[in-house]
Length: 114
Length: 114
Image (cartoon, rainbow over all chains, first blue to last red; front, top):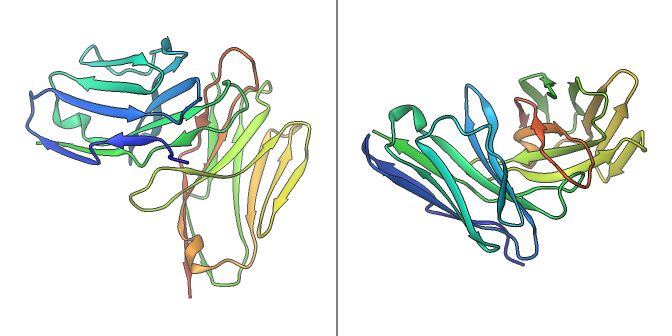
């Protein structure tokens, strides 16, 4: 079975540009999570969706960050405008039924903002 | 909210030795504790999990123990092999039908030397 698929795997862009990260969750999973990983802060939850509806976006650092889930098989995380401090690895994860169910992670997008 | 502390941050062992990673959590309502292994360039992968109605769980060379009274849980890897080298994360969450987020520890980099 295909796991969580993220694209692109690597993104290098200049400060001020718009960045869009994409995620395809595991089919049938009804929860989707976006995380950011840095050496300093570890794994941080940015936002999560249940049945395509955003449930908690309190981890989104600034209004420059936005996330959407237009259907059960696709989600995007957008940064506009991007800044060097946004450089990190961004992970998408999905799970069944929420609480107490394992989350399955994609292999991430390594984002570098110059 | 929940806070998960993980120790040590780095651990070096010789092949064949045992490795132990410890985590503490703050929210007594937490009742689901997964462990993830992250290899270089990959997303975290679930290796074992435990729920609060169980004190210990084993899967081949990996075991996890849970002490709810003390609010700590540990990962034990026996007969370590070089391929066990990775970053390991513990996490805690509340098993609930409505909302589910994992709070992660900061990770332990395990290095197994041949």
